[in-house]
Structure formats: C-alpha cells, structure tokens
Length: 293
Image 1 (cartoon, rainbow, N blue to C red):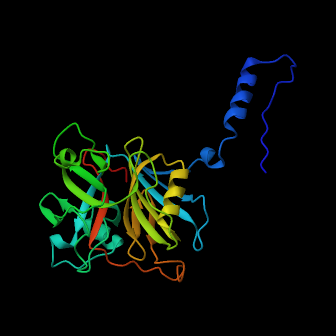
Image 2 (image 1 turned 135 degrees about the horizontal axis):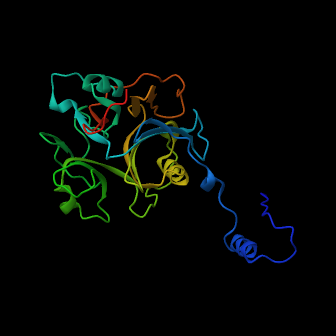
Image 3 (image 1 turned 60 degrees about the vertical axis):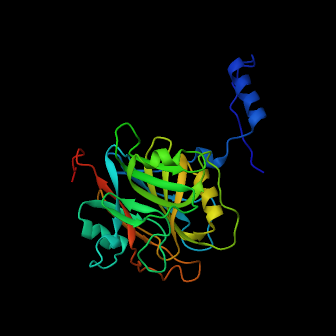
C-alpha cells in the first residue's frame, strides 16, 4: 500500500487553500505515478526530438523501451519510399533507404506487405506512383503531401469518425493500415497472447508526428495500453509492422540509432540484422528549414 503525504501549515488556523487541496485529494485520490513521469527528450534539431522511454509494463525479453522520434510538421516532412516505383532497384533496409535517399534523417516501415514482397496490404499511393489502389477495411489512413492550403500537413484519418472521402481528396500521399488508438483515444485491440516487436506511427495533441519502435515483444493490446499511459499525448496511432521486418533507423543531431524487430521473445538478443522492406516512411527536413549541421 502506498502512502501519500500532504504538507500542512504549522499555523493551527485553518487555511482555505490547504483545505481545498485536501478535499480534492480525498475526492479523486493520489495522482497515478505514470502521470507525473516526464520524458527526457533529446533535441536533435529544432522541431526534431528523440527519446528512449521505459514502458510501464516490463516485457518478457529485451529492454522494455519504446524509441520515439517526434517531428514538428512545420519543419519536417514525410516521404513515402516504394521499391515498386523502381523495379530495377533492390529492396532495402531502413538504413539503406536512408543512405540511398540522401536527404532523409529517419526511416521506418510504411506498412505490412503482401506475399509478392512489394505490394502493401492496403491502400498506398504517393504523387506519381500507386503501390496499391485498394482501400481495405482497415480504419486508419495516414495522409500527407497536402494538395490544398489550410489543411494539416500530416494527418491520421480515422474512418470511424472522420469524413474520409472528403479528406483523402486533399492529400497526395495516403498509407492505410490498422488502427491502434481511436479518435477518442481508446485502445481498439483485444487482449491476446502473441507478442512481437512493433513499429508504429503516432500523432500528438500539438500536431507533431512520431515514429515509434518497440523492440521488446508485447501483445499489441498491452503495447497500446503502455503507450497511452506514457506522457506522449498520443491522439492517434497506426500499426506499421510487427516482428522481424519492423525497424527504425535514425541519423541526426549527432545521434545514430538502428532498432531491429523480432518475431517474439525467443532469440531476441541475437537478432540484430535488419530485413529489407519494400515500402518505407522517411522524415526529411523541409526546404525552408536551415540545416544546423
């Protein structure tokens, strides 16, 4: 049982301020420990921050950390990379995609892919190229590359509460995948026993977007519960990839990170090699933002 103390004045005369605080404490109870935990963000560049944060629940294997790269869409943009756009080019890992693209700072999975090893499981398009034109039943669509002014540069469209037909017409790039957090900040996954590494995409209350990578195995339901408990202010999240193909590569601000997924807890420590991924999301610096390096 936890004990909580509230400092009271030595003056025996009742103070209305302290009395009000005490009554609120009695009514609502002590603050949850996770609510007061801050995140030690490392600023890589203005508008681009990185943190490695302990999950509230310990995993069965690995370090139980979530690696978070957070970007301000006023300074940084998203780019969709597709092997299908150039069949002559070999399929690359996240690190290799970053090296081949030249100007990108970070790369992660864009989605799961079909047995042909190239085509996304759901809708995926960008200006000048369509990887998959099929809109599946999945409820979340990542939209970027606006085609008109006055709209958010990056948006997670929740087909359960947003006007998808209207919104999709306003963006040049669309990536559909499985919803993790609803527009009401609810965990939409059922509990399950299977566990694996996960790469995900999120947006916060300030409109910033995030690459999220958790190498330690969690069930997706438990992973979402943990992410919601952290002070990330997540307002939406989309599943990108799980298991061994999941990965995050980052090189910016004097920091280089490569995190590679695993199917489950067995052999997690020995799995260090990244698998080639046919579709990737990349973060790049907008032209109006000077390079500080």
